[in-house]
Length: 501
Image (tube, helix red, strand yellow):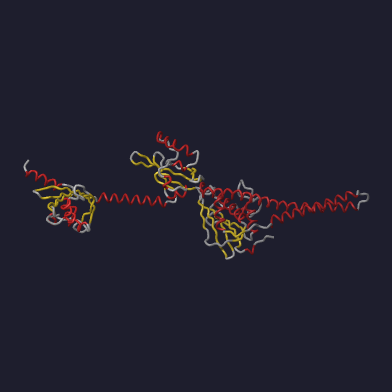
């Protein structure tokens, strides 16, 4: 093959190469600058050939380049020749870009020539930066997430344990990463976990992956806590990994326990109030016949005393019967007085908080019936002196009545509102869009044993009225202009209206 053919082929390689190719002499002067270099650097070949190659370098590499060549000629020490590395190039417009530079050395006519192969790695750097940014965002999410996040591999070994997990379980990440996740589980779940993973790999059967459920976690100190665990599956190649999102249910569980306790307390109070109301009614009803018995016995005794030959013991016994009837009447009067005017156990309370707690109890299951519950609570209501349990009972009764009414309605909206209609007064309104109150019921709505419900006893509103009036307030019902009923009750904001006699 002739030299001219070699030169032609060499030229063709340089001209068509995708990567930039530069030839420089021992002084650093550019001998060859191929079209790919023109595209990379923005210079035409004629502008660069004969110029020092440092023209294509940004500071501080530009200033150090001649010294590097001199050092190489004197010592033979290589920093890039025959090695290659990532460097920075400078375009004609002054902008820079990252590149892989591979430098080879050859001899031509006794002269040393260096061949530089330049590969633009801007795209790769962008991808790497995007990956770093993505990793930083993921790390930020993991580090700031309120819920715990755990990543485990297919063998159950922990790969990621975020700060929320450290707080939940009491372990530092360095204590658990690399260990089996079952360390975070109490028996018997701990002993079953590896078998569950093996079964999933074998059969594909899912018990929690992609579903989530409430489980129990175990802290470093051995204590346990309820949590909701959602597990997702990810794959890197053929290797699956599992991401667990952990939400601590301790507060919810405690709240549910408080609701149960409150329910029991309210039920107990409701029973006591119902019995008190019944006792008051019974005392009132029995007082008249007892008075009549006493009067009849006294009259009979007086008649017997005027009858000659009447047994003296008979008059004595009639007198004693009258005394006992009077005594029974006094007992009934005292019972009625105690039930109706007994001292209340009052304390300074937030009406908004009482309404929220009682309504949360009374609306359990309401949303399942398609009932929209709206709270419109006035800001900055000052505390008032009330019997907390009794007022909660009133709210529960009114809200439950509204929920029952709304189950029969097409439009199902329940609004619970607090307000301060006057400086010395606070008000609660329970507003429903139900069918309203039948006219024959409305006139005697607050009387005992009057009800609009087929299964009710008809004492709830009567008890509620007694409670509100004992607090110095009012309870009434009115038609809702949009359809349905509004129950309102007021309570004095000052303590002067209370009657503990």
